[in-house]
Amino acid sequence: MSLNDLRRSVDEIDDEILALLDRRATIAREIAQAKRDAHVATYDPEREREVLARLEAKGAGRFPREAIRAVYREVMSACLALQEPMKVAFLGPAGTFTHAAAREFFGLSVRYVETATIDGVFDAVRRGDVVHGVVPIENSTEGSVTAAVDGLMEGGVLIRREIVARVDQCLLSTAEGVTQIERVYSHPQALAQCRQWLGAHLATAQLVQTPSTSAAAREALADAAGAAIGGRLAADLYGLAVLRERIQDLSDNVTRFVMLGAEDAPRTGRDKTTLAFAVHNSAGALLRALQVFEERNISLTRIESRPSRQKAWDYVFLADLEGHRDDENVREAMDVLAARCPMLKNLGSYPVAPPA
Image (cartoon, rainbow, N blue to C red; front, side, top):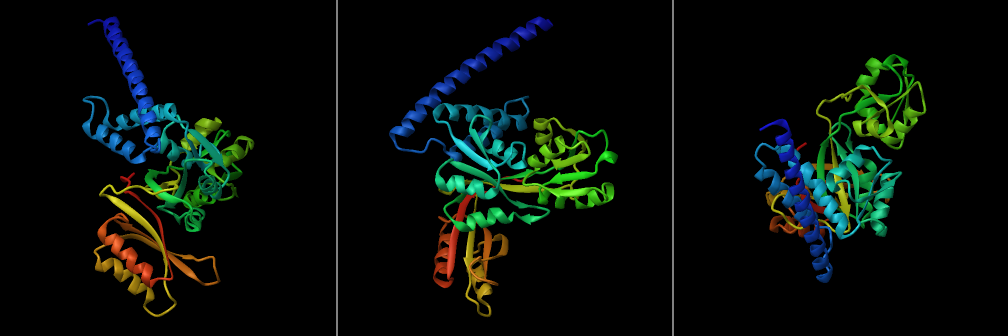
């Protein structure tokens, strides 16, 4: 076949794809009406996750498998927008790693609401101004994100899903080279993740903390001798050059982001539960609490202590454990802990995210 013949074949296939997209959108509208008639929520994260996993596993011949999820993520996002406009809050402004994570969760067709702080995301979900929120909760280099943990502890919001995403920090600027940089702007977590590189390459530069990596990009855009630490999305959105890539101290730098909602997720068989609990101030109290998990063969994947914010030197413990609150062994453990501990709070059961 000639080049023109091949191009005509591609055009015909594209026309077929467009017709199928129209058919899919029509059915999506019918599904939306059926959900309204049954008083069922329009957005079903678990159904969406199952569809994406099935399509990715099935594959499409020579079409790259890793691209299938990205293509269908946007198809499903667009169909969801036809069913009912959905608002999602994230730590803004646009271009943050949290913004990128939110787009990974929901695609481009939902209505995104920027908030200036992580507390603002939680407040928007609690008030019902948005259906879901997205916040970072843990980084592999710097540990837990305090504001997100505190927001969960306040209650009224549960973890619905999680994703684990690579965080490659870049040096962004309008300057022509690193030698011209006198100030570096970024969120405290990003600055901490790059402290060794900054010490080696910009030891005399002033480090300026900002509310987010995107806010840092805005500062760098207005400062001829300034640079921001952030991601490529921020560089693209704000028109900054990438002077250096992957400047984080640990190459395997990943952040765990969570989707927040009024309800957690139903059981899938491969789940995680996040709990908060307090113990009485007595010898061996924490050990006895942890034995509740051991006796029921429940693996803890993370545990940390946090100030209770009730009185000085009073602490609570946060734990991630394998299993769903509806699993028999997890349910038994929670019942026992509720009887033994002065406080026990479920912060959400949700599907385990694949590694980044």
